[in-house]
Image (tube, rainbow over all chains, first blue to last red; front, side):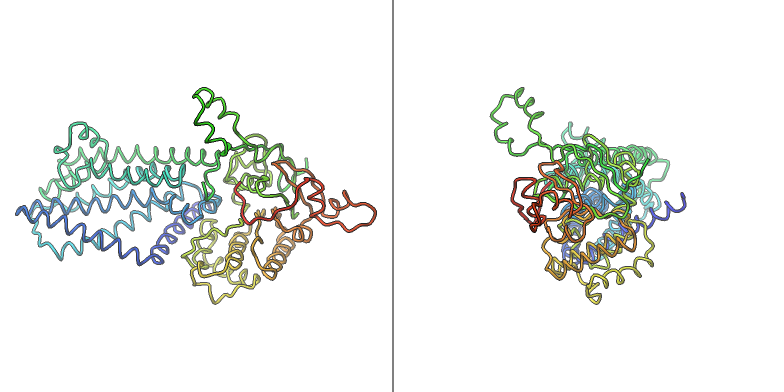
Length: 268
Length: 281
């Protein structure tokens, strides 16, 4: 019985992932447009660093552009999964299927991580063509570990934000974008958070991106290891452990509310 | 105790009335809060019925009469305010996951990922219903063939298909998952007469071969007369009468005059039947 359920869950999870990649294939024109924009954006930011004459500044900014690209895609894809279903008019069909909601969200999150990895790898390739960077004291395994750990907290935040489009189709999607913009502002993506106004620095403490960027930069620029970065890594693990269940609970509450007031149908 | 395929017991569902919104703004807060509780309309207002295994049960009603709300509640997409709905003995509120394993629904608007092909859409549906990919790949051309769909176009995006063809794919998608209860919410609205006949024939054949229970809402009186075992007439969220097509006609027949279901509808609700394409609730 459990074995059968597990197989069905795996089929459903792969079904969600495959569906999203099929959609990318069908919207390939837009995919190329967004890719070009992301590459140009990352290169432009790197070139701002070149004007400072400090090679470390270039790396500092490139790490910001790459990591923000990776983490924001995870957040965006998970958060916008509901908006996408609403836009296509398939939300009732998907929600009426016997696939459990946790399976749906797992499928969306797995797809988001794979998609973000592919996009980030392409951006990294183009950045390597533009900038000749020599890093002598780099700790790649720790940088990768930090990125992997931080992915969970961004999935959690995406789950929390996914509830907005569930409650209000248009305003929900707008709220998701504002949420994403605030994380960009407060997390020190392109500058240290010390330059932010005092009250905003307090907000930065709750953003997982703050710890991710700080730890990855320390691993790549200063070659810091697990001992020195354990504080940031532990915070990221705790945030992931807290945010994913909170996201699932909030999503479940949002779905119950949507079913109560009749917000699931296409006109919502 | 007799088990029905579907048991609906004194079910209610109300929504906030949208038309009163502008007036509310002018009122003071406490009055507004009081009025909010009042400004609700009942889309489904105390409906009870049961459906036997393998039965085709039709629901006839005008736009806004509560047909789609009822279908949504049975398909676990809307929560019940009061009352109880059981599908094959499972409560739609408490055992919603279990209920979803037995049902599928076709709506008036064929809801697909329109940029994806027929095959991609149907394989996606198969995967989220837990079907084996190989089985689905085998069944897809078989079902579409019966529905007279051109199986050489399976890899084309669905947006290239006519509405009638999309609706046939929607029916194929529902049947692909072998539901024991098939909920058809105006499945033939907007189809040409030939496609309509093919779909009706298909519904009858799956009921016969798979003993599928069907609930169908329709605007087409002839269709209801032809395929339904029993029909319920719904008006303002209430069932006015449930009977066989012949029973409904006999109820208003005087002497041996010819009576249609349209006459029955007019007589029982006092309203002319309007067959608009879409319904909101």
